[in-house]
Amino acid sequence: MQILLHNLTAATMSLDGPYGLIEDAAIFIEDGKIAWVGHQMDAPKNSAEPIDLEGRTVTPALIDCHTHLIYGGNRAKEFEMRLLGASYEEIARAGGGINSTVSATRNANEDELVALALPRLDALLAEGVSTIEIKSGYGLSLESELSMLRAARRLATLRPVRIKTSFLAAHAVPKEYIDRADAYIDEVCIPALAAAHEEGLVDAVDGFCEGIAFNTAQISRVFDAAHNLGLPVKLHAEQLSHMGGTQLASSRGALSADHLEYATEEDAKAMAESGTVATILPGAYYTLRETKQPPIQAFRTHGVDMAVATDANPGSSPMCSLLLAKNMACTMFKMTPEETLRGATINAARALGLTDCGTLTKGNRADLAIWNISHPSELAYRIGFNPLHSRVFNGKHIL
Ligand code: DI6
Ligand code: FE
Image 1: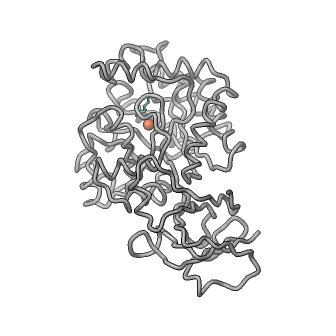
Image 2 (image 1 turned 90 degrees about the vertical axis):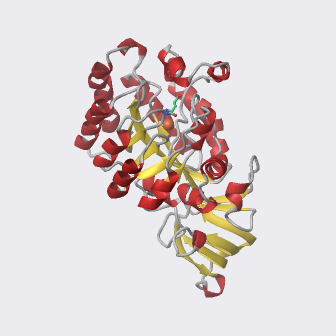
Image 3 (image 1 turned 135 degrees about the vertical axis):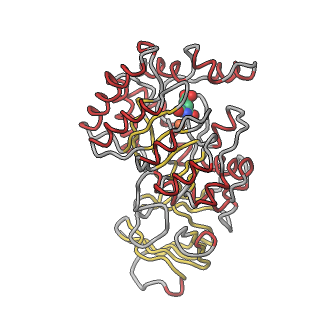
């Protein structure tokens, strides 16, 4: 199976210069992989059917490296309550918040969870996304966490998409364990992790280190369990307050620390040292009307790679648009359009521990997004407009 794409601008995200841009480029795809990228006049002679892209821009397919796409119900009522003055934390402590989604998720079977997630998945794919990370964390019981992960994995059999799963039972304390968070970690979270791993359902282990969730000592125990199983870790850290999660995650060589609104310069230094990606989630900042901004300049200064993701979830970020997340990261946090494209490609791949995608590089998977734009900065600029022309997924052109 061979395809030659020509008459295009390639934003390789791998070469020197802005976006690793190559004008008048061609891309040769063979057996699901990128076999060659360069100036079209140098394209290798071969028998592949050429596809004229008429000057369109090609980027690596987008990667949404932080989502909670699988869940039951919705939280529109809490959205209303917050606008009337209740805080996210107050609602959570009163048994709403994550725990209200836990009830709705436990009440849905695996088929229903898949059906509920498909429209959200389709919205992401329509914008050129080809790899999506999906977390558990709304089951909070062994059976229900496994059901979420199975549903997440099943999506990849129903659509042209690659799914990576993160185990997030340390997301909230379920109501049957109220005031017994340590017992929940020992009796549910760690045994469920072992069971999920045994079934091959876990690519990484995540947690929510926050006043309304788990402290660093509790997350540490979950990370120990991950380590014993040989699984990489990541962490929701410093989202609503400074709890020390970033330092913990960095000291454990975490793939990413996510949110980070309350992270400090010292945290940025620790992340740089451990090569931990900073995953910026503007949808949650926006939805919660947060005012404390993540320390973007410190991440730049210390050379921390930044990813940008949707955090798609029913509570703090009911958003299924990675293009909008890119736009918000620019407008609200003054990230550059190029930083946000790195954040949704190469750095998102790093946040997932993937080395075979996120750039247009020979040998990588042929996961591409083809756009009706003339420069990749346009992907962060418009609001509520989708310029995707088509995708190439695993070497197949999907129109
Ligand atoms: N932080 C978040 O923003 C999501 N999870 C987390 O740990 C929110 C989850 C929710 O409100 O349902
Ligand atoms: Fe999240």
